[in-house]
Image (cartoon, rainbow, N blue to C red; front, side):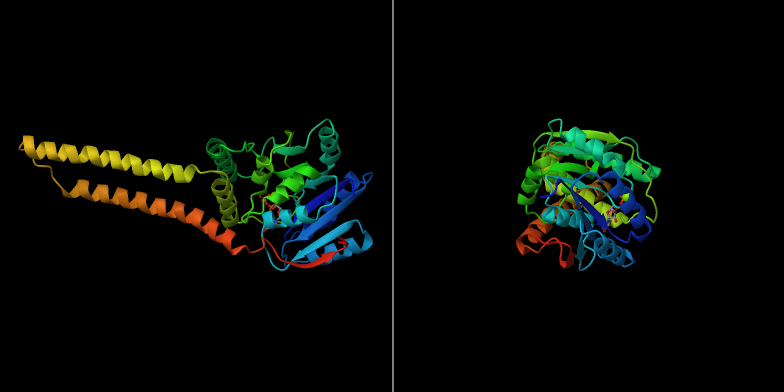
Length: 308
Ligand code: UDP
Ligand code: MG
């Protein structure tokens, strides 16, 4: 068994690849390690680079997906084959500096099971920073089960027993950092400066980010469904009050309540509430549907240097 498994998801990262490997291998050179590179359906030269690197160094393993399944699936695939006593998840674009690994190992050995890195400040643009900060605030408020640390990503060092527990959660639409927080054990934050992406552009489209945020919210919180019950209850109470008011005006006064505008507003409001509620229900049903289909989270086309 290895002392350390390093999991690196890669999607069209040919520009970063060489520097990434150099810096990573230098940082862990005196450790008995394996590096697991996951090619998440890259369409550039990433696959050939993985092939080349793994031929030269048998400690470098490759998992080649049959298509792009997404970052979370790639990380999950890495966790599935990782064999080390400690497992590290790190982005492939050098935003998470590999040079921090020895420090993280030192820290975990002072008696922890998980070290999760937390970004001290973000170097993304204003809009992205605002969106992230809003998301983590919301998550913090609405997920009661787990304490999802603000600004923690997937960059983390995890003990084998925790990885085993994480694998027990066989859910689809995986939100790895939520799963990691959910399983418990002794976890501690590790603040760090997140660098700019070394080369290339972000592989997270707006759509993928929204999907990630949805997975976080709907997989780890009942808040949306509680909220629509609340909206339902609220409109019910308002309508009861409305009924009594109308009856009162009708029976005891000779005031006539003018109709059209208020009717239009009320029915628009209720229509909106209903559509929103159906949408929220749909989000949960989608997830139930995904669970019942039991499709795998990813398909592997080929593995390299994996003798397990
Ligand atoms: N990634 C992946 N599959 C995807 C999108 C991204 O494996 O569909 C990888 C990517 O190659 C990188 C990591 O996930 O190593 C983080 O992606 P990125 O840096 O593009 O995200 P950002 O830092 O912009 O949120
Ligand atoms: Mg990045």
